[in-house]
Length: 351
View 1: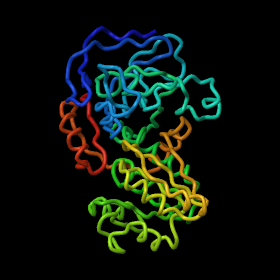
View 2 (view 1 turned 180 degrees about the horizontal axis):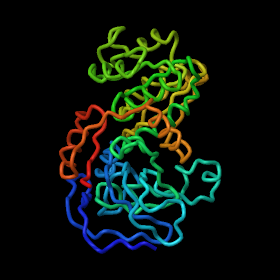
View 3 (view 1 turned 135 degrees about the horizontal axis):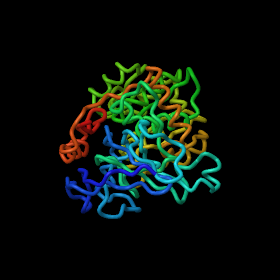
View 4 (view 1 turned 120 degrees about the vertical axis):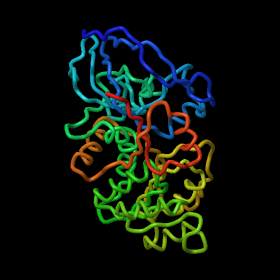
C-alpha cells in the first residue's frame, strides 16, 4: 500500500440539514483495502448536492458529510489489493460510488439500482474536499486530453443525460424533447445532436432556449410564453408533427413532468430524470390508449460512463462551466436554488 502522509485538508461539510455548509480542516483520509485516495483537481456542483444538503429525500445522509459527486483528481495512494487503477492516473469519483457486484442488477449492468449501492457525496464523503477516498472498481477513468474541469460535469450531468436519451429509444432522425436546459439539459442537447436526433428544447427561460439553439437545437418552446397561447404541449406537438418520439425531462419541476407526458408521441417514451419532491398526475387514458411508456432513468452504468466521456474526447460534447473556489460553495448553492446558474459550476482546486 502507498500511504498518504498524515495531514489536514479543507472540506465543505453539511453539519445540519438546510443550513449553510461549514468550511473546515479535517484529517486527510487513508484508503482501505480496495480503495484509492484522490487529490481533487475539480468538482462539479449538481442540483442533487442541494437536495443532499437539505435532507430532501427519504434516505438521508448521515451527518456530518461532504457532498460532491463530480470530483476529478489524481490518484495519490492505493489501498491493499488495488489493481484497477495506477498511481498518478486521473479518475472521477461519481454518484455511483460502489455496488455489490453480485446481485441480479449488477450482473445485468444495472448497478445504479443495486440495493447495496453507495453514493458519492451522499452515503460516502464526496468531492467538496481536497482529497477523496474512492472504490477503485467504480471510479471513472478520465481519457487523456480531457481536462479535469471539463470532465467534472460529465461524470454526473453528462452520463445522466446521455443515459436518459438512450432510454427514450429514439432513433436517428426522430424527435426528442429536452425539457429543462440547465446543467443536464445543455449537455443533453449536444448528446442528442451527436446521436443524430432532432431536438426540441423546452424551458421557461428565453436565454437558456437561445443557448439551446446555439448548441444545435432544431426547435425551441417557451413553456410559459411560447406559441399557442402559452400551451407548451400544443406547441411541441405542432413542431414535431404529433409529439416527440422521446421526451427527456431534466427539469426538477412537477409541471414539466405533466407536460412531458403530453408531449410524447404515440408509442413514444417519456423519461424522467429530474427529481422534484412530490407527485404528478398521470393521464391514464392517454397513456394507455396511446401506448406511451413512462420510464425513470437513474444516472448510468460504468459502460455508459465510458461512452459519455468518449463523446467529449471526440469534441462533440462540452460542458459550459463557471469556475468557483470551494470557499464560494454557499453562494453557489444560493444561486442554484434560485435557478440563477445557467449551466454548470465547477469548483476549482489549486494544484
